[in-house]
Image (cartoon, rainbow, N blue to C red; front, side, top):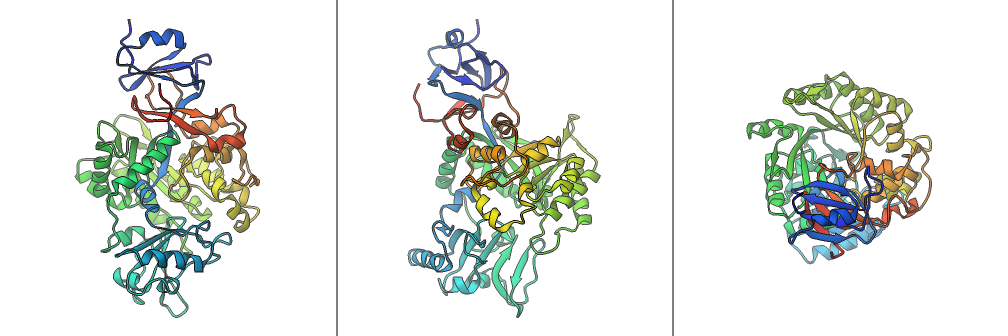
Length: 504
């Protein structure tokens, strides 16, 4: 007779290969059986956690393969400068002034938007000097790839008229050559300066974990381009003590690969009983300053160097030119074979601007693509007002990429948008904004297909990992317009219930 179960989920609709299954048995951190409730309830022992799902759907645990966990946790600790909270520059200044009167040290804001649906322009140091002239002020752009400092902040981090642009970053200047306060792609550079480095706020991380688990997310990849040994140790601390009770993968910033290797770590290395893993090497490829950085020839060298150290790469590529350069570089790079003989696929992150000619290059590259379909949901109206009509159908084209045979995963890129995987699936299937407006383009054929893009294609079957979510409403049966409202009522990670809104 089979040993008693650790968990039994019964009276459920199980999304798996056994269409009539209404129960799942979990034992030893894996799925032990999937089948009929009446039969599988016999495995219940004195210590079995039995959960009546009330006819709800059980799906594989959701995976968010590209987010920024520490940034997402910290974002809500600053002053909310998003359009809904601060719709114009005067409102941003007023909100920051209120906070400035209540604290010391760096004053932080987040979420300002320079688009026509936001402020209509970037903030500058003069705006923020109107907030404070004695304390440093920093406001993050909604994208996470830009920020604005006031004059005191610029001086504190050593930015003046003669300061050169750091590698990969841009200090935006006015017609006279003076810094405007706007900094592009300089988050890592700023973190190296005194007073800007952020610590580990476990309270904020716990709140973030509850948000993720409440969506049914059981695994996530932190895609920080500056992740290195210090951040690895931070993750060990917060995974090891249960602050973040999910399976986590940490990408390694390209410039930190050597330090990771010297610490005895490599791609696939694990800690915290396998709950924390070393992932891809992250390469930032941007055109935000008007030219590609790094140059395509340098990018090819970086890919070769990462492969030589045993790391597949994840190339950040948003703009059309960046996606083209990433696809060409990865097409020319030999595949990376791991010591066990498996091929480690490289990735293109975001792939935002991908019209048909670019899509063909991506398909030929052999890379997997991580797409932020949730941006279409949350920012669709902004795109409709700011993106050329002929490009709009080709933004974050999960459906078109998949139809061409490209492996596609959906990801949030939180904190840029809310890490709601169901909103991303809804947008992938409908190509519509949250307001219901069509953006055009090729849709993902079904919710089941979109779910596969957010679960690594996992199905609930015996022997599989016991990473599961009991959700409502039924994502496979509800009208797609309701999909963004799906939430977990029970979330299981590694065979342990870590989130529960119903009692069994």
